[in-house]
Amino acid sequence: MAPHPTFSYVICLGQYLSQLYRHCHLPDLIDPTAPNEPVCIDPVTNTFEPPAHPEVFAALAPLPPSMQLEPLINIQKQRRIAGVIKSLVTGQHLANKLQFPIDKKLFQRCLRLKALDEDTLVRVYAMYPD
Image (cartoon, rainbow, N blue to C red; front, side, top):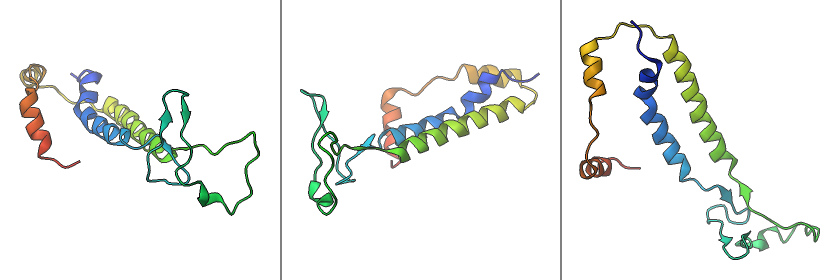
């Protein structure tokens, strides 16, 4: 008897979620004049703050008045997230192809597993570096 497909997906889901969690800490936007500085948004006007170091582009021709220098979208972050999703989908397809017998007693025990309490989870998580 083959396992329910959802059971196969859950086995490695934590690995994908941890990768997505790490990638979500990357900046969404990058200041073209200072890539390592955060991009700020003015909460009142809902516009981007001016670039941190506009003098970087002083040697170039100025932009037309209708254009302004804006932050860049962090494409690397989007590519990393897409890679995680692609590998998750590949894993799902491979898991669907697996056929193996189920030990019903073991399967039932797995379904009854309980999560760690919050204090224990925090202690365990603190043992691993980011």
